[in-house]
Length: 402
Image 1: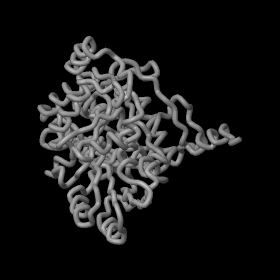
Image 2: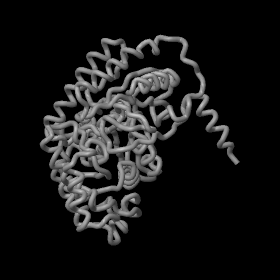
Image 3: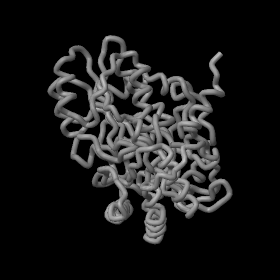
């Protein structure tokens, strides 16, 4: 039998051990974490909607009509009218022909990718794609070719060398770097080489685009350019679940073939009603998106002036590159000692030698919140220059998840 205890000990020694932190209260910038107050800069609640009273009200008002549980899969007796209304609303919101509601973003990527490609086919995947995309590629049993991050020239050469059915899949906004994929060029390549393009815009929906429709809409790309758009609802949308939107032919095909849709219980229909309410808010949330841009711009200017190395991101995801696992953990702990919660992200979530602090912003953050973050970063800056960071196991309840 494998020595699981030894594997855990090795992870601790390498600074890769992960634990869960106990959060109390609703999701918002000010949280109670393991019994103490912290100001959070590590949530994906980009628009500050996770605790919005309109969404809570919509959920509660739906419960008498929908009940709580989904009770069955969509293909048996679990496809409630509220689910169907959400799918119609998502299709309208994204400017697409149809949409299909999944229980989670992970399940959407697993189901969509493994349904659309199989043995004898080839999937081309950006090297920095999310774990759910990677696992969907593996599950498909297709041949998988990973192209260098955002490198359209390398992808073009790979596509030209490959026959048969081809699928190109990419994140829209990359979750750990915060940059946006070259979607226009990818769409052009896929048309040239007869490949099907799938974009997972989990971190773009709600944040980018003229009315929050995401990175695809921000570039003016249509369903013809990007046939399948995947999005999650537990980030900027503030609720739960996920969707894929695209041509009716393909969503109908997924109903027949996507195992993570067919063989799982439907999400609570009241959540679908709350998500419809959230989409109404997002369409008119230009002030919130503008607020996000202001926070990001000021943070980038002042954190850079402090000597921190930021990555090339204009989204609410603002990683501070550190490199060493232990230094990233030490910086995260020092910020927490000053009341600021920013998670250290380490391999395998990011490549070896690229540990970082993933700072994320919400429209709910105030100027005073940003002042506190910058003051704490100024006080902790010397940690990245010091040679005194000990490579010793961290107290488990201070490690975090990344």
